[in-house]
Image (cartoon, rainbow, N blue to C red; front, top):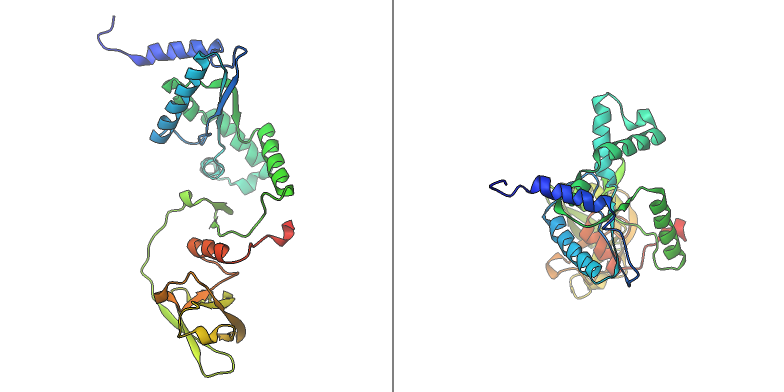
Length: 294
């Protein structure tokens, strides 16, 4: 007998026995109880968050299994599109190739090939934890059946008027030519300069001074917003100003959410450039639906 407990050989042997004999599959005629595991990224590895939530789910599953419920803990992984694409593209680059050289179908085939060969790290880690998932039902978010189910749900929700297509500010990757999530963006602060621009008020000698760190975006302005309680600009509400360089007339409108010390501010109804401003405009204005989806 070993002096110290060696979990590797003992736990692995027993887990393989449990899995091979289908002990984690739904059994019996009791009431059904099912948990769908939040699918971890197929490219990743387990972290503390996974360990925390999976332990709770495993405890619930084992408890209901012992109660005689027909219990299923559904296993699955997420395709993690951007991360997977980057991994496969690096492999292609090592062979002096790109996804454009292969074409769409061949590149998707490479992704599937990588998934089958190297995408099982996280599921093996779940097994080492002793998680009692039903691996015989394991699914992947790019499986044909799941992809069809997702399309079916989205189309059904859209036709029922429960979701709609709208304009959103996204993080665009100029290399991968796709949108990426905020979690995949590395933000970096830079020292800037505050520019002050004069917007002449139509049919008067007055002007509004707009301060901005992005003067190049001035050409996309569609309105100037002022706070209705600011006496300096209250008399200008409803009038227009001339957009510098273009002489295009844009309206002066009301925006309640402006802070008093930022009352002189531009309002880009159709030219959002910052997530907080875009979200603010969504709340303070009408829904912006995609005309193509109407």
